[in-house]
Length: 270
Image 1 (cartoon, rainbow, N blue to C red):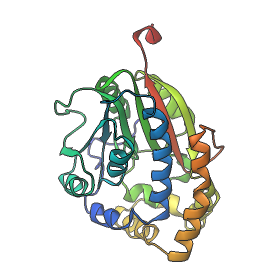
Image 2 (image 1 turned 180 degrees about the vertical axis):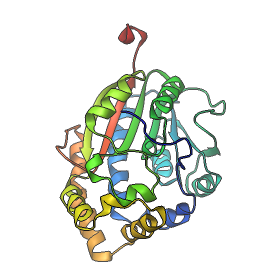
Image 3 (image 1 turned 120 degrees about the vertical axis):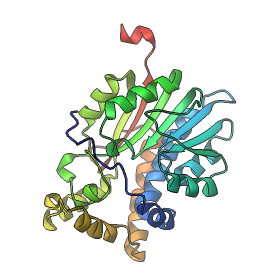
Image 4 (image 1 turned 45 degrees about the horizontal axis):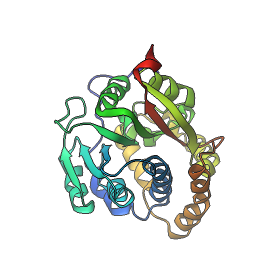
């Protein structure tokens, strides 16, 4: 898909790291997403020989990185993030190496069997360049695990506040992965139960028309608040999707996408 963002686009606002770190172990959205990621990771690393290497790019505050260290006890796990503020949180949370680094000019980390990038690609103006770089970091037959927000029809103040460049359709994500040396093994939407609610609220609130970053941040902050009863209900409803992801069923709709993609062999590209 085309990149219409300006070169001055800010990929993330570091002031959000402390707020996210405070809620992501409890907030229904993060809990559901992390269960989905865990289900996908288990299936990918289950057949790998001991000593495999896993890298999380854009590890943020380390909630997923910590989970990866628990799931990948037979391998080596590392995290990298552009922001020192994020790495400071991740280093405290995850019992593995987390470093500051720019994926466009990565430090010498070696190659990996698995690379994960979870809700990061949508922040970056040059998604093709990023995916090409991730491909070069993977060993032959290595896997990329990726989550991104789905459907530009859901674009809202939250995307503005989060410094998103785009949301993805399944066809767009499949195409951009294929153009950068990957073959999609599994692709599904998720957060299916949230889709009707999010679609409705975006239109009722006029969220899709908000462009002012300050106002967008104020409105987005309300979605990061934990309302105990609502939070518990949505956390429970979304547990069903983990069952489907474990079996690699494709969900018909959702507010996010999950992709598992294999690095193509040279013969695949001929």
